[in-house]
Each structure stands twice: as C-alpha cells, then as structure tokens.
Amino acid sequence: MRDKTTALIHHSYQPPEGFESPQAGVFKASTVIFPNVQAMRERNWKDKSGYTYGLHGTPTTFLLEERLCALEGGLQCVLTPSGLSAISHVGLALLQPGDEVLIPDNAYGPSRDLAAQTFKGLGITHQLYDPMDVADLRRRIGPKTRLVWLEAAGSVTMEFPDLIAQVRVCRERQVLCALDNTWGAGLAFQPFDLAPGLGVDISVHALTKYPSGGGDVLMGSIITRDEGLHLRIKLCHMHLGTGVGANDAELILRSLPSMALRYAAHDRTARLLAEHCLSRPEIAQVLHPALPDSPGHAHWQNLCGSEPGGAAGLFSIVFDARYSQAQVDDFCNALRLFKLGYSWGGPMSLVVPYELARMRTAWPTHLAKGTLVRFSVGLESAADLQKDLDQALATMHR
Ligand SMILES: *Cc1c(COP(=O)(O)O)cnc(C)c1O
Image (cartoon, rainbow, N blue to C red):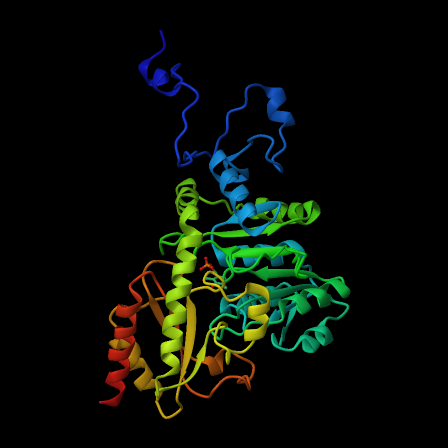
C-alpha cells in the first residue's frame, strides 16, 4: 500500500464527466500532465489543439480568448497582465532597432511614454501625429515606419478621428496598424469590419475597463485576424513569460455576458450628464463624441451611429479660463459620488483633473483654453450624479 502522503497526491478518484453549469470552470496550472512521452514531444504550444504548460493556455484562458475574438470580430487572441502590457507586447513583437512607430498626439499617456523612453532606449524611434488630420498621418509615414497606433476616441480629450481614412492610409502605405480599442470595447464599432472600410491589423483592449466592469482586475488582450502576425505576438508573449491568472480570467468571463448592457447604461448616463454640463456657465467646452460640437462628432456618427451603446461612458469638460487650477481642484474634492481615481468601466463614477499643457505637443486649436477634468460615469442613478456635479460646481462661487 502507498503511503497516505503519496495517495493524497496520486489519488485514483475521478469526478464524473458531464458536469455543466452557466459559468466556466477555473482551471489552474503551471504543470500540465501528458499521457505519454510521445504526446509530450508532439504537442504544439502555439495553437489550441492541446495543452502544454499553464503559460500557453488552460481551458479557462482558451475560453476567454475565444469569447474576446467573438466580441471584436478577430480570429486569434493573446492575453496579457494589463492593457498597457498588451500595448508594449505589440511594440516588442513587431519593432526592431531602426524602426519607427507613429502614435496619435492624444494617445493613452503611458503608451506615449513607453515609446518616448523604453523604446527609444532600444533604438526604436517614434513620431506623434495629429489624430484629426489624415494628411499629417500620411506625411509622417516614412521608409522606417513599421507600425501606426490608432485610438478612437482619443484618451482624455475624446476627439473622434476619421478612423476609416486612417486605416486606408496605412493600407496604401503597407504599414501595420494597431488600434487601442478600449473605448469602443468591441461594442461601439467593429474594428475588423471591412464593410465600412475598417479592418485594422491588430486590436488591443484593456480588459481592465468594461470587460472586467468591477474596477478589480488588470488584464489586456491582443486580437488579430492574420495567423503570421498572431504567431509573432504569441512568440514574444512566450519569451516574456507574461501569463494571466486563472481567477482573473474567470472574473472577466463572469462579467462578459453583462457587458453590452452595462456599456449602454454607462453611455446613456454619460450623455445625459455631458448635455447637462453644456448648460453650465462655469464650463467652456464639453468633450463627448456624441455632442454635435465635440471634435470629430461626424466621424463618430458615421462609424458608431447615434443609438445608446455607441459610445463609452466617458466625457471631459474644460472649465472657463477664469477658474484657477486650485478652484478646479476644489471642485474635484467637493464631488461626493464621483471618486478621485484612475481607470474606468466599473460601477463607481470617477473623476481625474488633467494638466493638458503637459500632455500634448501643442494646445490643440479645437480645445478651449482652461483646466480639463475627465469623468468616467459609473452605474449610479443619473439624477444623483447630476446633483453631485451641481453641488460641486456651486462651491466654486463661494
Ligand atoms: C486604461 C487604458 C489602457 C491601459 O490599461 P491597463 O490595464 O490599466 O494597463 C490602455 N489604453 C487605454 C485607452 C486605456 O484607457
């Protein structure tokens, strides 16, 4: 008889097959057991035909990858431990010393810093292009350009670019284009849809935002439709060893079914509040692509339509220039339901004041001069959020 110590590890009981429930199981593994040496030698870690090692996938991560492909209209997916790591993997997989990457001037800030600092150290250069001027993008694509990042709407300032024209320029110049699709989330528009003229090469998504929906998970995805491109990214992912935890993957799987409903609810409330802000005398400009005066509104309408669910729950305001930074800080501190915090997509509304002058190469002509504040609208009642904005604005007149 085996020692009990061994029997606890090599136990013969197997639970019956055929268990099925609404939520997927959580499979945790570093080690995966092979039936024999031949299977161990033959199994391919690069595809989903079997399992080789936890880093390369488990039933839990394979399920999440496939569901995200369905969401965004892609064919292959690589999961990474954060949205930012998804962005850095794309760069590391596709760029070599001597190459150049183009980034929109309103891109997610850490993505710009990654290019300006870490990639610069690797001999990879970058240029910032004007997201609202397709001719500027075309002009900047040169012989060294290997990758163009796209983002719609732009982080913080919410400009909606002519994405279709931008993708067309990349096609014409035969340069790969990668979209940061966190805002659209696979719901507002379809990044791989060739019918309106999109068809990006790569879609990156910070699952931290709407797919998580809880403000409690960090994860990113890289979705493609080209097998060769996917393998380059997958190989880089393997070399860097950046797997995701099964419990985190399960949290995203649990939240995905409610994502479209949550997204539409965030959208509806954000539009109500953005419109309300238009009527406030303290505010010089409201930035939300669904507002007719917001930069790129026509591009947004063309791609996303105008129904609820066509925009994320984000908007920014620019305070009239008569208000000092300190007064705007007081406004942010006076908010009770909107909490001070980064990220978005969770149930709780959030607010962040930004120093735009330090974030852009030049103050864009389409933006009013003043202090900018970005709201991420949660799932609270719209009436309560509006009251909270109004009471905080009232403190500015004391
Ligand atoms: C939040 C965000 C990211 C980064 O995601 P993390 O998971 O926080 O690293 C990337 N791009 C955009 C547009 C984002 O909003």
